[in-house]
Amino acid sequence: MSRRVVRMVVLALALIVPGAAGAQTLKASHQFPGDGIDFRDVALRMLAREVAQARTGLDIKVYPGAQLMRPRAQWEALRKGQLDLSLLPLHYGALKQPALQLAFMPGIALSHAHAARLNDSVFLRRLQDHAEAEGVVVLADIWVAGGIVSRGDCILEPEDLRGKTIRASNRYYERMAREMGAAVAEMAPAEIAGSLAAGLIDVATATSDSLVQLRLQEQAQCLTAPGEHPFLMIYEPIVVARATYEQLSQSQKRALQKAADKIELWAHDAARAADRAMVKVFERRGVRVVGMSAEQSKRWRQLSVGTALAEFRKDNPATGPLIDLALQVD
Image (cartoon, rainbow, N blue to C red; front, side):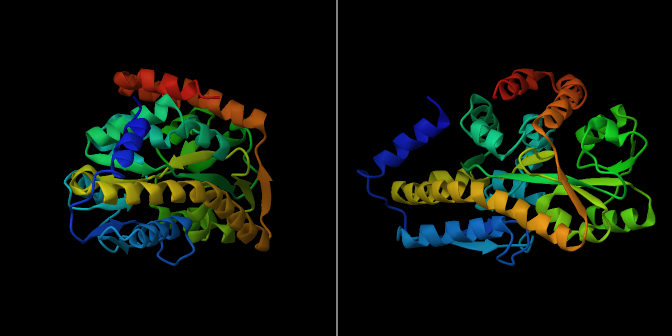
């Protein structure tokens, strides 16, 4: 049986098996702005409200903006049961479990619609199995899209990178860029805007929220917006420490999963809304905004299969079947 079916059975049992656990407060951490605007912050706060309203003696305290711990420290804290809940990029666990890097790899998820189909795929169940083996249970599937900013011509085709200097999102996006004749510059996110302004880089990629938070609208001349065919998609689910989850009563588990299912549906639309809000910010600054076609997106995926994904297979041979499962999802 799939993990989702197993969990449904567990939740059904909660209807007939009374919970015995007393009242308790779970700590939920995330790295995103706690401004009530970033939809991921809103998502965790919604989860906390929904769980509280279920009145199972379970409360959730949300710590936004990396207040509780550094972003990447969250994964190890979840594994050890030192942190109860988080909304984070699943690829943070790739240092311990390389397969989780596929949660942020070019050519895996091609759009919000495609990501929704991946959510129901064997590929994502296997990915979640890898996370659970590390002590982290996925409660809600959430995907975040991103785009490309450039100082000059718009970037739509892989060939548009030729001769450019790019700050890419990770080493596998860099691998694609080098294949197309681009130079790669490595720098912290906070340095991107200044590097664009100084002409040290021509192109940068980031998620929709980061494009605005880094104020790249002030330096860009063109934005390749996510639209229907985003340049990048990142899997950033709501997760719970397995050690925490196993200690909850059946009624508490049921309330937590019911709330997570509700937030998952909401987040699918909220992520698209975040893309649209980002575009408006760039348009108000007079930045030219374009979007990729289905054919252009297909060419980027072909490039990834031959470069980034091929390199990842070589570095991590055991992930080959998992990559194949992802590529089978239309």
